[in-house]
Image (cartoon, rainbow, N blue to C red; front, side, top):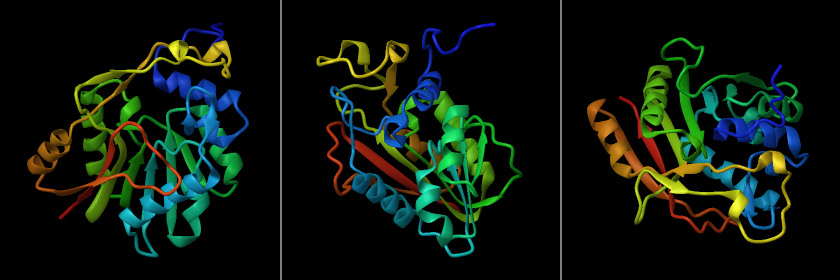
Amino acid sequence: MTNTKNSPISSWAQWFDKAAATFDDPRMKIAYYKNGKTGTPYSQHAVEATHRDIFKKLAPARDASILDIGCGVGYFTKTHAKKVKLIIGSDVSLHMIRSARDLNPRGHFLVAQAYSLPFQNETFDRIFSYGVTQYLPSQPTLQKMLKEMLRLIKPHGRMLIGDILEPVHQSGRGSYNKTTQKGKRWWPKTLDHDLAKLYVSKQLFENFCKKNKLTCKFFSQHISGRAIPTPRYDVVIDCP
């Protein structure tokens, strides 16, 4: 039997699964770092401000059903479950889903790939995926996720893809390697990796919306308590 705990990390999905099993602080499980060199997480205020921003952009009705793709530890459900009819969270990480269930004993969570979800067509009023695109393996994978979101959204529904890394001088993949960061090691060796993040241009979403006759609007990120060194953006997609 393979010892997955000590096996080399080959994907972000594997890294997050290990991080969720390693750290006690939910913010550390989801790599919500204010300073990656020291392992200092953002404040709880910044976490809550982020999820208020998501909810505001989704603008759901009281009877809305919401799907959170890449739900992590379930912060969104914890903050907004009582404001709508239903929130379901999905994540590829089993340990992350276990953490989400610990945080939300009455919540609804499942392990699933972002591009292959076990729901019928037109199930949800709102669908969002926040802080996920940068950890996908490729742009074709992102396009598969967008197609899956479109399959699951109801007519007149709204989709949000957020915290997207914007390519400024680079395109495609940008380098990111925790093992080469300067400073004192604060993470265990089991989380060492040589993975890169995915940068996505707005044109990809514009082309997707044009092809499927959808409307999209882009937002720069301005979240209280969260200073972001790398340019990022959100996109809201409305369906006819």
